[in-house]
Image 1 (cartoon, rainbow, N blue to C red):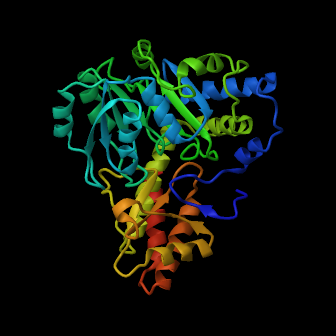
Image 2 (cartoon, rainbow, N blue to C red):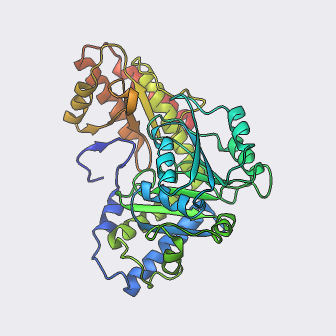
Image 3 (cartoon, rainbow, N blue to C red):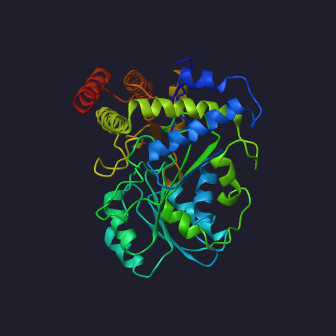
Length: 386
């Protein structure tokens, strides 16, 4: 990779040369037949990745825009939405939905844990149009148990909206998968380009099942840019115009989808599980515990608590001086933890170097650590898992 720094935040993630090259392609008009073919191919690859029987939308915007597009096209003003939140980004569905006059209830877990299924059952019994589930929360590193949640939600008659911003292309989001019943499937997946997909930020990606599209037919969508009725002609034929697409980002996204599909989702899921377990095991030898236990931890990122005596800003600055960038923790964990991404185009060599640099940064703060042992633990875990 031509990257000068090792970007291991929970997004954006490292960009490989093939994607950079695609991004640097000559900019063409958005109705140019050559670009139209690339856009069509990118959309088809998205359908293949998510295995949806419905429609996919890839437009200029962030993951937050994808959240909005998913909600406003499935839940109408005055209808009820249940938010199952495992952290800061799950919580964001609440103000988003309220902005459109949607009635919202939220079930919030203790940070680092999952929402209790019995509480979910109790809430669902009161009736909801849809339920949002953040597949992996970027603030806590907690992954939702879709195998347990989807049957409960679908049995209640609600739509399942999966926030895959830090999960898509790394965790199982197969929209054709049956969760115990032919009708129990994911209805909506929303995501962004800059996480496990490995493209620079700037694309909002949303997939709707046929069931979700049917539910949207009776809605008055209180949005313009986010209304899929305005975008549908473009997604069916990208030579049509609604709003100018980010031409070069579509080039990059098409290349990224080729990389994803060439590796295969089964292989990508296994690789990310291996990365997550390996990095957490290695850092545990430094006395650095993950906020989320292995039973609930996400494969794509980890929120790592500092051992006593480590100063957050100084630690992250020491890493930055060595060419490695990690993220601070959010909300009440700010200063008490850092977040490290291990997804997308990240490699085992990058993780090994990360473990070494984290050890050096700890030693700089007079924490006694065995860097070689940590690296050995990482390698052993990767050899077992991959």
